[in-house]
Image (tube, rainbow, N blue to C red; front, side, top):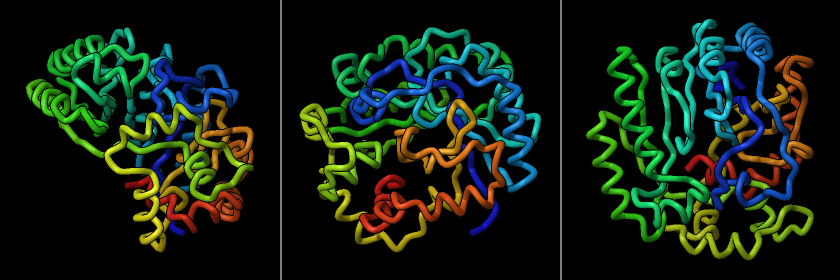
Amino acid sequence: MDNEFNFFIDVVGGCNLKCPSCPSGNSRNIPRIKGAMEPALLSYIMEKAVNECKVNSVGLFNWTEPLLHPHLSELVQVVKSYDVPCAISTNLSVKKNFDDLLKSNIDAIYISTSGFTQSVYGRTHKGGNIVLVKNNMKRLAELKEKYGSTTSITVLFHQYKGNQQDEYMMRDYSKALGFAFSKYPARMLPMEKVLGYINNDRNMPQLTSNDFAFMKLLTESLDESMKIARKNREQPCTLLTKQFAINVLGNVELCCGVFDSSKYTISNFLEMPMVQIQALRSSHPMCKKCIVQGGHVYYGS
């Protein structure tokens, strides 16, 4: 196991949307940690991280919406003060003044979307407003030019059955604004739900009727996706060897693919050396269940 990691840090405790593909939308019975991370805590995390490993990048997101943080630009500046690239992934369906964020010259912004029209977008980015998203995209492009920002902006389009025409329209709109555009088949998450279904394990979270209804929109069934993943399960798990997931309290989660902090918190990052945290992560029984089924391949595909 090498000593280089990408960190994914949730700087708030929630999300403004209830997307059916995401545990923030499909696992709302699981209590969520609330609050917003203080810049001082992030600084302590960064100081420890750079002293114990090579930090290749920091994403100020995992399962939550970073734009909900009232002082996001300050957090970006904390990360960049350690000479580490910083990024966010956002649904962009938030009323926000983006000036300070663009002034911070954040390295990358990823915009998650699944439609160009509200009727299509609203099915899978539940609670989102596509008009607001598109207006915010335009504003980001204007501010990027105004401040001479070198921020890379990429639109990530989730492919579902029935949203291909919207994909083309969002692609053209994104490119007209000077943004990169990337597409990929949507996936059902979190991993504990996926594995509960595949393993028929009643001790793990179960798919609901809403989940099954949603999965009819997937371009590839969950069973077929996991079948393909199992065939490639010998691939190394980069979720374990290359990534660290930390929640808003500064606690290390097992990996970026699991959601329930009450079951998958390993340790407070500041209270234990990374080598010990890694030993606990790699020996966790959930990891064994996941790798046997190729869950790490599914998550990364």
